[in-house]
Image (tube, rainbow, N blue to C red; front, side):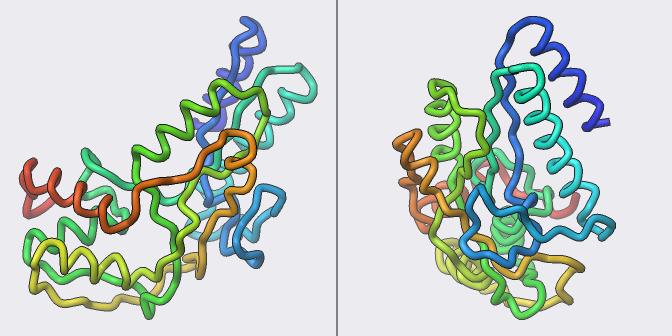
Length: 223
């Protein structure tokens, strides 16, 4: 359905002369063998694993977007969004930051997977929005990485959340999901050069804002 939706929107952009903006994802890099990940890297993705429906849908969306750009001269912009967090997220969306904050505020154990040593970058939502707005004024087909190049193990934000919430919740460890990436960090050289952009909100500050917002909104005890 998402694949067909992308094609229909590209057809509409082609017919009307509109620009087409695709919000892609760092998941197109899969479990990367190149670190940090730059836009020229093709990725290491299992095409039929448990994560593949999402991964391959985004890779398809990029492929057809660039096909329309090349064949039909559609004005395209493609961003690859790395882990992003902030206020107003669904506490049960399954993302690492919302999981940790919700669990800490509810006094529940914080769930880490594997050893917790796998790495991610964490981008505050305001920084992502700033990057998107800047990109709208630049004619470049993409892709452009938008993410925070600061790299953290999964245990580091967990400990920060415990510190900032004052929670006494323990950490518990579950098996690592299949094809879970071992490391993830964007090379943002292209965004710096073309957009004059880089993230400004450090993890501690962004987590503090997110925790305050989730506290103010109330934390449900179950989905």
